Length: 141
Image 1 (tube, helix red, strand yellow):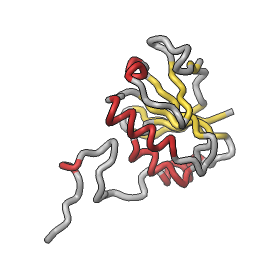
Image 2: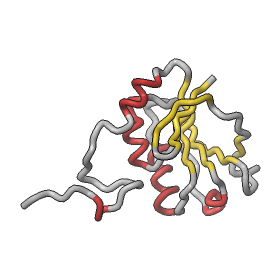
Image 3: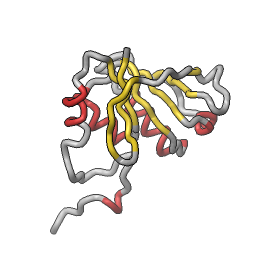
Image 4: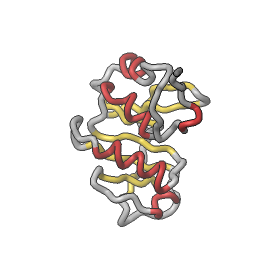
């Protein structure tokens, strides 16, 4: 059983993972939830989905982070982007910066620790998939 970490009205909440029927790119139809493996090539067809899940096969596999950025910046996906599989609190901050908006956590993860890891920094000097250059902290001369 997994837990779902998602935002509701600007606040992060832990809840039971929804019973979602995930479809691969080959069987995807509009209105369904699309699941992608980390080695997928982002396609424009996925933009029709309201929810895209990226399956992380291992904690050490960062390809899903790159795929998330490509979906947000190249494809223009604006819906819910969910991290699935080997999701650990150590990288949630980076997942947020890459454009993820929800996380499916295994039940062995402590939700209080997970919530504390979401935003350990209040300011950033680099742009991200969620933040444009114009809104970054500027270095003083």
